[in-house]
Image 1: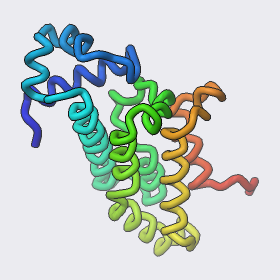
Image 2 (image 1 turned 30 degrees about the vertical axis):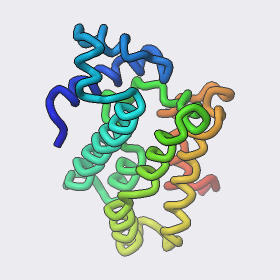
Image 3 (image 1 turned 180 degrees about the vertical axis):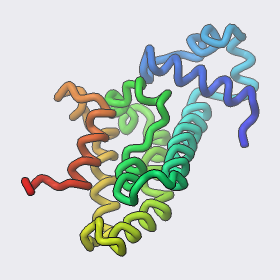
Image 4 (image 1 turned 60 degrees about the vertical axis):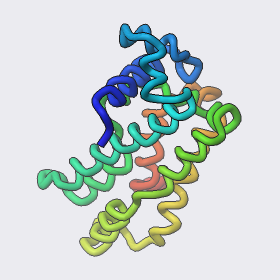
Length: 188
């Protein structure tokens, strides 16, 4: 559980990120909150520390969205799989994630944290996929290969400027990846 002040700063950082991308300053966050930069530095000793906390904060919010899907009895197993794979809180839908490819080069430690979070926490999704296989709504596939394909695809969005070059938003890309992973490419 994070402190109220820390959460307030992280939420303001998300708002500033929406406007400025990764090139925001601590002054921008202080202005957003109408507080001094010194107050921010009492909570986060440096911008990199705040970025690392931000990664965990964002992924924790995504995990919360996934958990809501998992307990929703109105959704079929296949609908749950689709929703879990494309989970993003509504407040993140307007974030321009497509320019995050600069993370790997400019912020390698933060990129490593993103990569670790993308590659962990798959237990519920794998269990849901197994349930889909048992119900016959998902064909038997190697789930480790499925997981790796999904992870690697998302990691490429954070390594390369493929989304920017092709004028594709992160949300569109995520929805396309999930569609291809769930429905394949063959006409039925």
